[in-house]
Length: 638
Ligand code: ME8
Image (cartoon, rainbow, N blue to C red):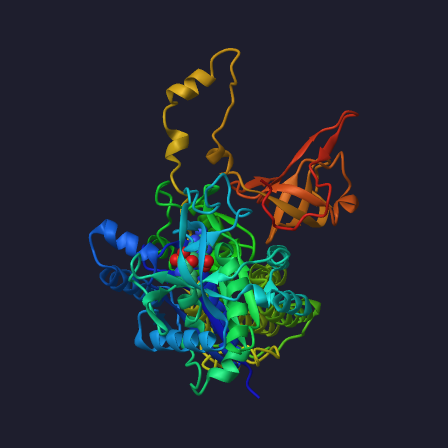
């Protein structure tokens, strides 16, 4: 029987153009939707725009336009952007659409008739940025903690939803369903919010103050509060109440949101659903924020990242890959173009691009572009590769389901690295001279591994995946259910040589580094003054990550140098001069700090792709910089 999967993004406010943050959530939703489609599930993916409320009204007024014109213009920008990023939603909803207005009015009337909406008076501090009242505990120095703007006190007669009544039920539901809100840090945050009374929710605005909203069906002098209206889009979008697909899809609903809108989704929405008489959604998946140069993205700081610019420079696939790979779902991440380039060059140009290019070119050179049948002996090397492929397929699926998206990719990259090592160890160029039977086995195993990799990367990099599958002659369906067993590619298919799939990108010119010293820098150099101050942004250019030593060995003819294979989120080799202080045996398994974005250097003929951090010991010799708790491999050291 088919499984259902219903995924939503927030519907975005139409007061501004789409930026990197909106793109992140929507790309993640698309990756999940594609993953579930490839797994054979019935999928519905909803995104759209949130168009009513004070915020839109105010922006329109300040721009000298009408809210409708502003909404039309900016909603269109979102709608136009998604296909350019290979985002394939099933519906793009606008809260100004007639079916949504009808659904909201129907729900308002039903909840009102049941007695869960009443008329009353309320005064409180309102943030137009968040479009909600802030509690005293949420406020910071009288301002909104997110928008940092002073809050205005609003007191008026309004309609209220009996939210507090459902608090005990909600606490119980969250406790009984540990993955209702995930990751766990946000679940805990919500349980914290629910420890105190949550008040009833003001769900109307008098028309004397705001007309840009959905009229209350039971009082024409009021419009509906924008959050009460907006959250209902998740029901309208799949045809509530009697659309054919509604029931099975709603049972499997998963929302994706940023941490900024946790409370409306984790508190308002489930209590509203309870009052409507519906089961709550299955999961609320909450991600962190992309910051730029360690600061929140904001128009006033001028650091808003334009997604189209990045897509044009690096391509859709690489941009999507970076977003998924460089943010740990749930935590904040820092965006820099330099980091994107590093990631691109290391993982895409080097690891994946190289593997596909050298393998397909060898099939062209040695077998005229026809995939040979594996006719030679099979050794441990092949068995290891086949085993790795089957472990990776399982791991990938598990991690995607658990929303550990970046580790799902790390797993795929372990297969890519294994295949690259396999080429080095099997040396097909040597076999070409002496053992064509073995060569055919090696080439078959390589190309087949590439097919599996191409299927696994499909949800994240759909274009590159298709291109690679075409190159290796796979004409079958792309499906995650039957990616295994190893050996599905039929010998005899044509393999085409890959031209650079991901051409290397040069690092950004560092104008700041090369520029003449500023007055301040000169002053800092004066005698007695701090002579080596660096700007935080320059420090940020150095990428230090947690590494775990996988293997270590002595470098021939050197008593100082050790060659280490280190997992820093990907495998790298480091040649380090610590051989008189450490033995290879005591290094295996150690967590160390590694500079991962140094230009590679060659030491005693071995390429070193990073530098470990160490210092002098009191008693002589060196001590490695380590950690006093078990750190996460690949995490940035800040
Ligand atoms: O809140 N990093 O809309 P919105 C990551 N209309 N994600 C970010 C981000 C960042 N720096 N900035 C924004 C609204 N986002 C309401 C939602 S839903 C019923 C109504 C993403 O345009 C993230 O998903 O302010 C965040 O939750 C959302 O954009 C907020 O979009």
